[in-house]
Length: 124
Image (cartoon, rainbow, N blue to C red):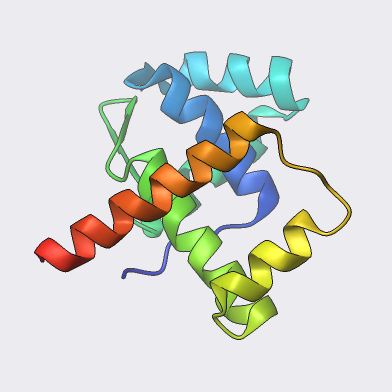
């Protein structure tokens, strides 16, 4: 899996890009000022950094997405579980659910996800 680790402020910026792309860089400056309180120079620095990381491209002042949100979320969550729980998904779930009750619907959704993953892995 590719490493798409980004900082929190970069993720918030990317959420704006994902929601609006393709978007003109001038419009992106306006959106970041309104939603993040950023100055023009901060937005252009973020555009440059995300281009360097290969997440977006900026051609002819039009910013477009190269890596979808779901791929970044998968990489980020995998890195978090690896770093914090030595890669153990059961340990992560135990910590996450500690002190929280699951509704019957939530339990069924989680079971369905596990079953789907088993089927996917078994068929691969």
